[in-house]
Length: 329
Image 1 (cartoon, helix red, strand yellow):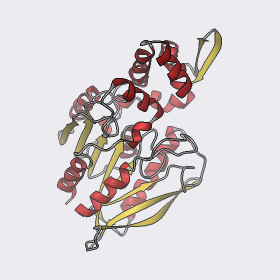
Image 2 (spheres, one colour; image 1 turned 90 degrees about the vertical axis):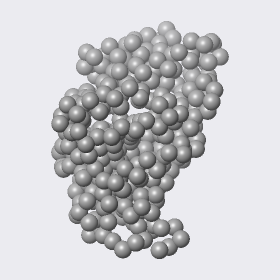
Image 3 (cartoon, rainbow, N blue to C red; image 1 turned 45 degrees about the horizontal axis):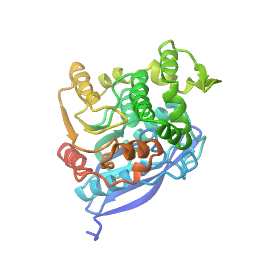
Image 4 (cartoon, rainbow, N blue to C red; image 1 turned 90 degrees about the horizontal axis):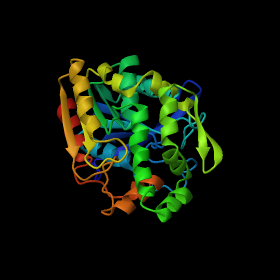
């Protein structure tokens, strides 16, 4: 065995209208092996669960999936992670909507299952919105042998936005300097927090855009990108997942409240899936990293995604590696 216990190869998957570039991380012990597909969340444009700098300039790299993939390989599990369509080294249009994201993930899942390196056992892991994509792929393409749902959303899209922008609104209510900071450093968060009631009302009426007055000027927000998630709401997707599943959440998640994990468990049970484990990582944020101790810094780093540079909790990714090893090895 090599000193690292893993080796990595660049691989690409041909999908409809694009080539998805990724990394296949393999154990150094004799194969074939079980393989895990790693699906990123909203800001995980790049294969290592990092934000594409063309969309999110100045955001630190967190490397969450690189750390996870290498840990899995050292335990004897191969994995594949990839750049989203149009991001990183992948071709195609950047910033596609959810329907295309699900289709791409489904194509990669079929490819994973056909790999000669795969011993027939395959798992999927989805973080945040990636957990939603995982459930859709399980339904449309095929079940995994095991699944990990990290920071999965259960509540409605309107409820998600209310949760996130109430945090911003509460911070701005502390004073003029806090409001000015948000307006300067995260203009979209300022607009959406200020106009939250109009946005939520428009979503609930299934209107294509929200409109109102912001700082005395006409204001609109296009909501068409939410259509797929509204037609197929998150809370209805867990019934499609029949595989043994780990529901993993963080106690200090400011993106998706930890309470959603309990409802996810209930939804899986209600659909007849009793092979479910729940783990809550104490003191960690949505990415299982350790945020700053003070409230103001936590909020500011969330809005600018500077918390991507924070250290990971000591339990991550060991808790995922342990689970998948028990399920697949």
